[in-house]
Image 1 (cartoon, rainbow, N blue to C red):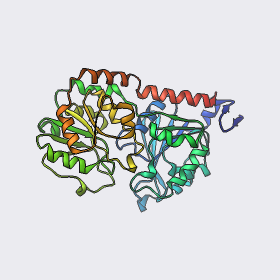
Image 2 (image 1 turned 90 degrees about the horizontal axis):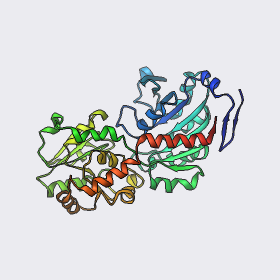
Image 3 (image 1 turned 135 degrees about the vertical axis):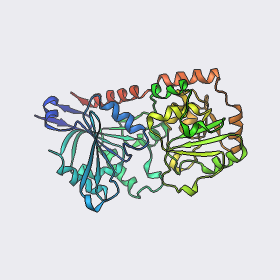
Image 4 (image 1 turned 45 degrees about the vertical axis):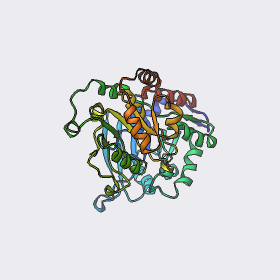
Length: 376
């Protein structure tokens, strides 16, 4: 079988026989745990698995001297396997992966993090995709070398996808085949909130009005804004749902009207969202939020909740007509007072936005670009 490869076009002479020779069609290298907060990688990979047999390689788990140089392997869906490498450093993954694979060449490689770049020294992919969902180099605790590492997948990839407009503007100058696929939504899932009348026990006892957030709670959250707003609006309950990451528990503001409910399963989020009177995105404006395009914006819309957000660039650009944008705690309190759940204009705008932003549409557009890059 002959495979002709060049930078912009890959032609399979006999794709069917190639698939019988390998155990996976697509290998994903991801910095996020599959079992962590359900976000872009899980949405995209799950839908791609309708067409490909997929292996997800995660970053190393906490090193266990008794299980070094092994993978913890788990099948999470019929066409998706997740392998967690038990090594000290990412650069040790290629050798471990090679010992677990029948060969070192595969149809598609899909990167979410440039930190996995060492695998390209050992493994070949006939098409390489870099799905840049965040500017990881600006996150708290990011390795210093990640900026230099990112040049390699940008250079080697046939396709670069970005998770938002700001990120697209930052990356397109480095690759001629860069495409923006901003946050999308599973509208069917989150619209369930509109019909739920009985709430989970840990939120059912909290008195209305509830202003709620779900997602990771880390350095991207403006904790001072949350604290000041809660102090000025003592009659309002502020609910934070999600894991606390990269910050200390004692960094969190502790007031009687701020409630931390911990991480919840993706399947349970609509029931919690149903209990919100208003949904919030109290993001800090710092380096780590400069390029974010919050998926939860659309998830809140699907539940028909009024939304209050700080002025994240992508939110301002795309949703300023239907999201309440705030800068200060006074702004926040005013927005709470003025938010209307039955705002007809807001709901009409939500419906128009959601019509064009499903994950199914996003992934099919990604596959169209892949098909243009790879001729079968």
